[in-house]
Amino acid sequence: MDVAPKPCRPPVMRVAGTPALHALHVTPFKRGVLGALPALVRFARSWTQRRATVDVVRDQPLIWVVDGLCEQQHVQQLKEILDQQDVSFVRKTDAYVDDMFDERRELQEDAQMLVSMMSSGALQMAPSKYQSDPLRSLLWLAMQRPELLQTSAWDIGQLSTTRRAWCAQWNPEDLARSGFRKSAFRCKVPEEMLSHLAPLVVDVLGAPVQGLPGTDSARGAVAPSWALRDTTVVRYQQDESQVPHIDTSDVTMLLYLSDDGGHTCFPNLGCSIPPREGRILVFCSTSPSNRRFGGFAGSAYGEPLDATMHYGGLMEKCNGEKLIVQLLFAAEDSSLPLDGSWSPALRGAKVREAGRTQNMEARSMTIPSVARRRQSLVFSNRRCASGCKGLALDLEVPGATKVCVHCWQRRLQEARKGLDGVAKWRK
Image (cartoon, rainbow, N blue to C red; front, side, top):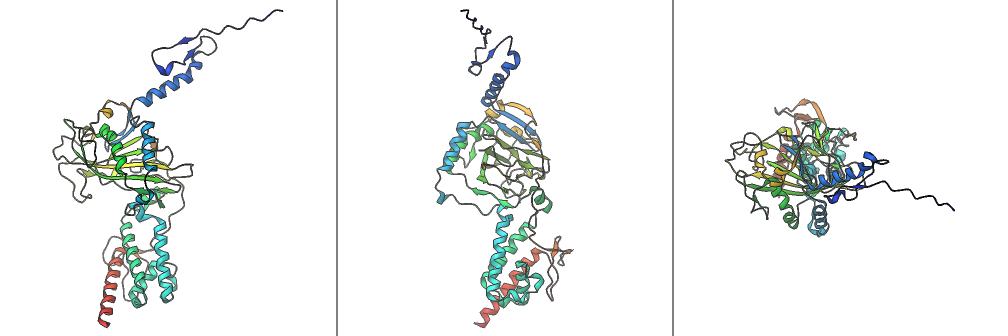
């Protein structure tokens, strides 16, 4: 019986000298270059992962995307630290810009005002055209029938008016573009986590950071000294995002601990940065100056740049969460030899030795299609009668002019003081 000869295996060429290519087989006949392509891709990826890269999105204002500095093992270690935190000590912050604009907060305020006014019978005394708007009903009653309002109504009314007056400073178009409706969960970075972040900070800044243990040994001839101004862990869930803002710091470092979620958007620059696990986004919200800029939260060395207004994009439907760590730094050296850019001040050895690309990681801004924000205040088409720049509220009170929400804030305070004075006199 004739036995067919076994086909001979084509000669194999092995490329030695690097572990990443030990499995690369190049056959001269059937596979050719295409057969080697998958192994070459794997090699390129492994090489890229081992070497840090800095993508210079912009020089002024400075925006750098750093990949390969925080490895997968380090990311996992940071996540485990967060997961091990005692929930009773991890509390959501409620003093950030996002929390002030959160629609859930406004709905809660409206509900509390309604309950208080309905329980005292005051709501039915307000004009019917305002009864669907708890705040305008309360303001009308404060001027016309203050004795009907309970203490709880005064408290929540003042709180809500003050918050909405503060929010009125924001450009409504910026809010509309961001699609913001709900704030994400925020908390301070745990102390244990800071010690693990210190090496990454040194790799970028290359200098000591006041308030961040583990950076004292990092000293450079040109690098300034820095102060750690704020630390935050942010967990974005579905439909959560961030209000457009400018950081009150010179340098911001964002470390992404997940691939999910919306981009970090810079609307005035028309670009955004997609999240990637282990990626570090470094940007500067100021330009160096010979004097500390007073009034900018008292923290920044330079002068603020409107171009660096940014926000965390909308967290749309996905299976996970967007998890980031934010560190804010302010320069402490008033004699820095800087010429309009913070780039020379970022002296971290690994960042300086990293491979460089030019604007490869940024994406064009896309405006999400989201539901329209709930209208917080109802304005008239007239300016404030007190001469303020803002529009007056659409609220008519006998004997009173139409004024903006800032002026209503003061009116409410004065009305309550007058009522308290009458109550004391009656006693």
